[in-house]
Image 1 (cartoon, rainbow, N blue to C red):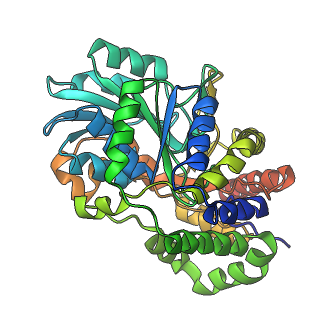
Image 2 (image 1 turned 30 degrees about the horizontal axis):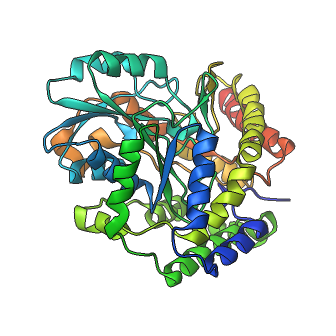
Length: 415
């Protein structure tokens, strides 16, 4: 019987060919391939300008600088986010003002923002968590009312839409992430987008002192992606990785979490990412961008199967489905009170689940100087479970996952 891993890497044989073609290209770095990828991406998001950079951390750092952020400025930010976002904000000498989330969609709750705004509040960072845009009308109205500069964190939402408009087009600037676990994977990298030609020119000027990424680094990233893609193939996972995880036993989630745990970064460590986006990455990006809508739609179709199956399980909370939103389901997240027991049950049935990687940052020890009361963020961090949702899975596989979760809670109810 096939086993289902918690996730896969989006990296095909086509991408491999594109990578080596770009790596061996005689074009000057940053000339035709990178420029074409930037132009094609800008057209996809329907903005005027796109600037490729090394990673989302660099994108946010550069974005704050180009927008004139000053030491002591406050920025409204969701408490439920990845720690690197807060690292960059603090390293930029800004003060994060944590806002709790709505458990209905995992995004910043607009009702809680206005009481936190002071005369020092200059920015609002709107994050589309897990590929699911929040209530942008209300968030943008608040930003307009208090003259806050809007930055869109679309790192997890490439291809998502709000009222038929792509994410990335709502802020003064926005950024997307292309790391190995995203739906558009260029072996690391990110894209800044804006409709302001002056900001775009200033951003491009900031890249002048950045160094070229080495071919050795790119090849190491390629090997990592290729190995992960191979290890998560259904046959390999079923007959090699799953038995190994079974031998590790109850410590497997702790060990995997330690391997994937995000380190809190200081400014010196962030400066390591001051490298240029490469032609090899752009070459892969051009291929993946053509397939992005198809990939997203496949995930949406499978998510609808999960939504239908899980909506009738009262012990499971799923995010609200809004007609005005196109959720691309970078991660399919549910919330359950007995997370570890559910994970153990489904693993015994051959389904490997993740307890997630997003933190309630208002409670992270390293950010204690900015602590705030954000109970929903803490609840979601402690109760969220990421269900498998990727290309090799069929609708039948997805339906099986929902049925097993329903079976687990039916059994518990009878007991």
